[in-house]
Length: 182
Image 1 (cartoon, helix red, strand yellow):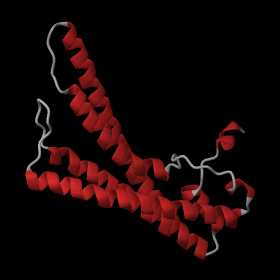
Image 2 (spheres, rainbow, N blue to C red):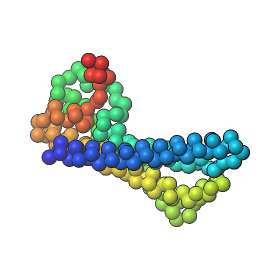
Image 3 (tube, one colour):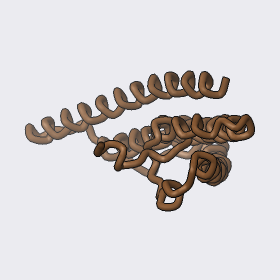
């Protein structure tokens, strides 16, 4: 059950990553068009502001994909020296810490969004973008990452309790650089 849930979450996060990737490509095309227009003496304006918003959204939504693809950096000096149960415990510990940190980030980002919504805040730029338009999907990305992190933690804990230690490595383990060199 745990591995099926992780597989379903991976498929969903890959679809989200494709959407985020398309968003980044559109942003790059928009910036390129603006650069070309500047050469002929005109400009869209606001490309720096819009690209900043796109990067914030890509970061918050991309974190869950990176988590399930084992792309987050982890120092595994001790982990590699223990058997499967020890590695599973290190993986669980790292997931508990990550879930706690990301949960706190998601929790602390909501007041930012709430304040923008209640004040009708706008960016202090020529575009005067309503900040909630950007902050709501940004917050949703951090919340999604927190939910994904919690799901991975719970799945790892369940497998450890079932004494299926080696299975946790495929979704909560550390991607070892030496594995790619062999």
